Amino acid sequence: HSTDPWREFDSSKVYMADLESALHYLLRVELATHNTLGGEELKTFKSVVTVIAKLYPGRASVQKVMENLLDWLVRLPLESIPYQAILDLVDDKMRISSLSLGAEVRWVGCQGSRPGLRGYPCSLWTLFHMLTVQYDASPKLLAGTGTEGDPAAVLNAMRGYIGTFFGCEQCGRHFEEMAAQSLDQVKTTEDAVIWLWSKHNQVNSRLAGSLSDDPVFPKSPWPSPALCPACHQEKEGVHTWNEEQVLAFLRQHYGAGNLSPRYLP
Ligand code: FAD
Image (cartoon, rainbow, N blue to C red):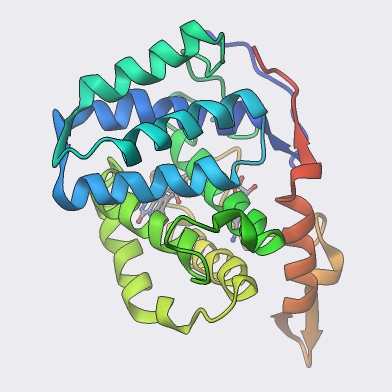
């Protein structure tokens, strides 16, 4: 919102407020464009709810909302579900057990310099990076979900979500192209963390200087040398990444220990 006060933030941190805003937006805004969920859409939605319910590293109360939603989806043998029922469930669970999932967006690390920049897409990247790192740290968390043992479980859920529900259709097509090209090369959960990082950098370089690029947060290869000096190497004047260091950095940056509760409602 344009009247929102600017929130100072530290780009070496990840903010729970951004993650919760992502979930709010996903459940209450993006999903609302579908009257009912059935068939492949329902399957895709379930797999996204599964990885979030099992791997979400933020507030336990928020994870609980997602777990309740998952229980309900799994127990309900319906071919298709009206969106309103999902919304009722999310709202109801929040009221009854005073679980919280804020009813509005509050961007912090994902603030844009103008409305319409950053926000939701930024928070989705952040959420999925966190989920790949969380899964790599504790693969057992997906036990019993039918996806255990699949190193690309989080990426497959993300691929489905981006292709089916993400409002930016062009983004969906681009992401699908990248996934179709190389997702099958992901053999370990470490590969999955690095795959998403590397694809995100491809998107960054494609979008640098484009209309969706926030001039205050210009797109560039990430992490910057300031954020992670050891990630960068130069060989005979040519820049290369030190992937071992990048992986260590991603584990730290997107690890549960780097989550900040600042600005939560
Ligand atoms: P974002 O790119 O959204 O990044 C969010 C945060 O993640 C950054 O602030 C940084 O802290 C961190 N980060 C940055 N790079 C990396 C990395 N390589 N690895 C790990 N963390 C990183 N927009 C289009 O115009 N066209 C598209 O085709 C398009 N495709 C998209 C595909 C997907 C799957 C998603 C989620 C978004 C896509 N977008 C696309 C939106 C675009 O990528 C940005 O999300 C948006 O422009 C906002 O940019 P941002 O500056 O907030 O940084």
